[in-house]
Amino acid sequence: MPATNEKLTKLGALQALAQDLKERTPTKLSQLANDSGFQTAAQVESTVNARVSSTYRAGGSVAFAALPELSEANLGLVVNVTDTFTTTASFVEGAGGKHPAGTNVAVVQVGGAYLYDVLAGFVDLSGLQEKVEGKGLSTNDYTNEDKAKLAGMEIASDDEVNAMLAEVFGTGAES
Image (cartoon, rainbow, N blue to C red; front, side, top):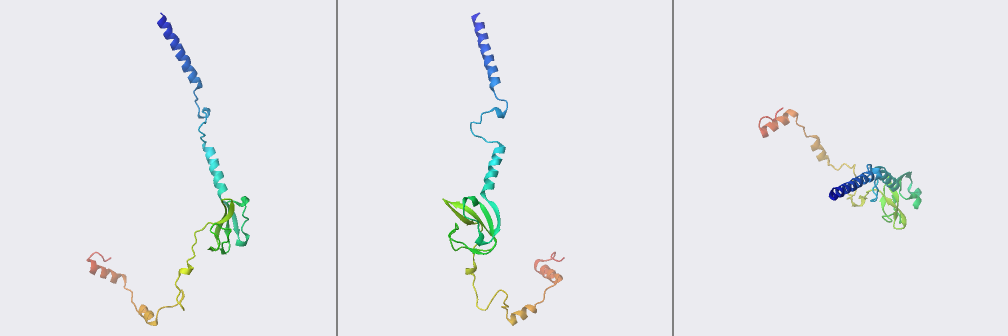
């Protein structure tokens, strides 16, 4: 019965192969090779925290004249400028930008240079306002006639308003 012996030999080889595969097959994720460079949740969190914390760092409040030195050591440092200021050539936006007290400024790298970057959206619209000679925000621009007309107006009572609404819209408007 050579056919039976041959079948048993093949069956034995298959069983040995199955046993070998069973022993070599990982049963835990930690046993797998990380050949794709996947990161664990802890590795991702650590990387994100490192990137976020290195982007910007709080540097407190300073006067414009005391802005931090433009250097690698101060890269990402953000300060609150306590006085109004006009930007210089050391700013990303260039010289001449006017900013109010309370503006935040960061030290950033642009190409190989370290510059200040204003972290605010402030637009000076003061040059666009129309000024009328002799008038200001608290000027009384009403004539005495206009003032008297307004003072002489009577205000309708709730009942009178409801009656008018009922007359215009029909019944049901009265309370």
